[in-house]
Image (cartoon, rainbow, N blue to C red; front, side, top):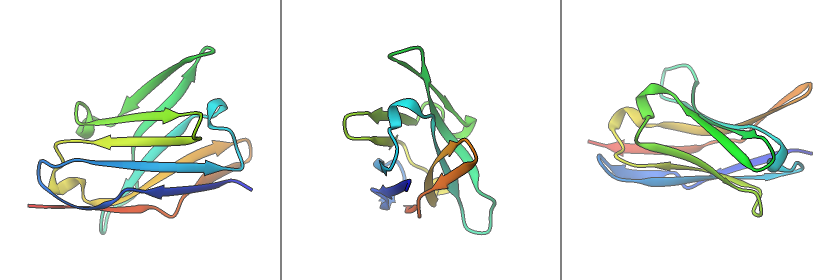
Length: 119
């Protein structure tokens, strides 16, 4: 059974940093592309970043425009964990952050971790 558990959220001031973690069980992250999404209050869930395997040892990363240059997605295959390093946080980054993996025939989500950025 696939499980994703996010952690690392919290309250931070504008300009601060947080590192989110997504620990996976029931699958090996090495062979799967992973995404971070977020959902702000009263807004639809939006895609934030992805990390995609390229070749045997490489990875490609992509970001939504609003976080480029501030957020970094990475993975530690030995720990079966994906990270989202968030720097220069802004109030508009306030949201519940979710990690996601799509497998053949199913899509899996964690319960999310809340990030609140104060002005």
